[in-house]
Length: 304
Image (cartoon, rainbow, N blue to C red; front, side):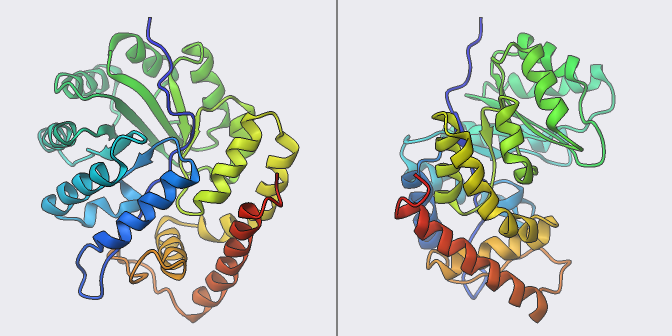
């Protein structure tokens, strides 16, 4: 019988830092990875959507994966995205991530149970160390719980599920019940529901940035101090409410935070679609000040 994948806690998605001439800032990436591990994360997701993976070349994806493995050096597990427009391209990314020692996270288009099962089996045939299925459907219920549970029993390498669906709380409970808590379930685009997710028994959460805050919150909750965890969560909610309005805004905000923390050389992003104007900047900087103050409070033990 399969057992729970041992990565309980915070599994942040790591932003890709860029230099002024739009190259990968590997020095900044190393600093952020070290910060995350030292803060107490249980795992890392890189490169993924928050890393602007679709705006990276194949070589950049490879170089980032290699860099992450070298810096982390086995201290925590790493998952990289293998999502691609075609199954052939997806399998190529699966093989590459597996070759560098990373686990694989894949968002699979759902048409019907037979098509979905076939896709998962094709990935499993590449023998990845661990497969994390990304159940992504922000406007709907996502992949049927029954199918996800059946696949967990059928596919040895499928040990993790990242739920990013509309109102994911109920799905957390249903999939955890269906797999008797053995499938590792994490929440992605639902950081505003952090305490609720933990109440429902979720094993991991996937924020971006503010590693010290989320690791402290998670540790407090899992050590039996829900009231203290909720107090810290309440303090950080204004930051989350601004940053998580939309994915491109989130990219701008967290890269700006990491830049102001001195990890990244620039706050630059590659993804188009948002004029991050002076009004966004003003509110972002106000919330960054709040975040930085909270990080110092956490370090000083004010939420112990």
